[in-house]
Length: 411
Length: 139
Image (cartoon, rainbow over all chains, first blue to last red; front, side, top):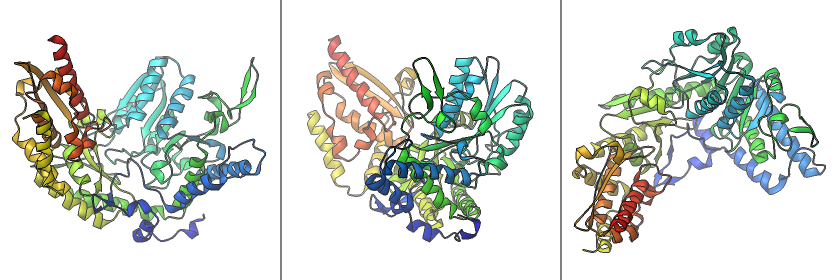
């Protein structure tokens, strides 16, 4: 969809398109503030899932029959929709995966095959476990060194430390675009430029950014960008790894099987071209097609207005929470969005989360798969409210009332 | 009072609440009121690490009856622990090992005992039963 057809942002209108938001939980109107974990789905995606399995279901690629060709066309059209949305140069650079974790593991395994003992990989102190553990496994396998960029108390990367860590041995920097726990937006473009200056590549974990801001991989100049479909209003079990063509070409396949081959004999197998080289086996066809629908939906929205709206919503929630005595906001970066993590003095996050749930409010409590980050702040976990563009100020008001009620009960 | 009567007593207590928040208010009060473990027993070997809240459990046999004490850093978890201990304490190891703790489901708190819930309670119940089984073997 072209720039000109974007509709003005209206939260009321958008909510109409998300049926899951209209339900009672424990007899209360649902307030869904767990968007960092997964997003709800718009009608266009739900209809496409239904349509695919009711009518179009067929295995893709190489099928000679009508249904197979139709499914193939739609699956590949979705790849192009996503390519255009993130402004990748070619659709071959869009690899369908199971999700962010799968994409990172693919790179850790396959790009990792090109590395040798003594090489270094840089991650940061605010990474999700899925952007820590695959690198630890790779480092163990290949004898590499893992280095971690520290953060300050506000939850911002200490960039001078990053600069110092970069050297000729650095081969890859893997960094989250937006922290799932803190909401911090990292300067990935700057980090990429600095990585490139020493000959290293950069992988950006976009699991928490793609749904909140417009993404332009060309402008960002990242080598890899990974995200999950379900966090960006699409189905679960599907995600994307974007990689620069030349780098993907230089990497060996990750998994073997059907679809990823060009010719198989018992003596020797040659591999398929991009993107199929990295897509072994029957993929999540419905997921791929419906993720395309989610991006069609996103393309119709004014992401600049949405980013501003979500930031204001999160700031409003944060300001209101700040008025509670004993409330500590975790993550106070200057550049942050869409997430408010907090702890209340003397009260366990689990207790607040349980009581909010019984008031119809979905938040997440715990370590958010960022245990090293919790250790850094010296807390067992946080209560995290994470917003999407379909959330409202009225919902934040009700949330604040519910938090107050919960605190009074727990004190 | 038999273990079944104790379970029934708790079910009756919860029956007077028809609102979820009232139920939890009661659980929280139980959690606040109960000193359920000696502070010197809050040791790592008694710790059951849940994903969210942590639980400490101590089990011993006194005069042929199981004596449990436990604690948690989350007050709701602690309140539910209080209920579990009220039911399981002063019972023979055989009774503890074989009793179906149906009261949890009957008062609507089964979500807290699901293995995926990660508040340490499911592991705690398992450990209580294991301790009881161990006690029957040691007899």
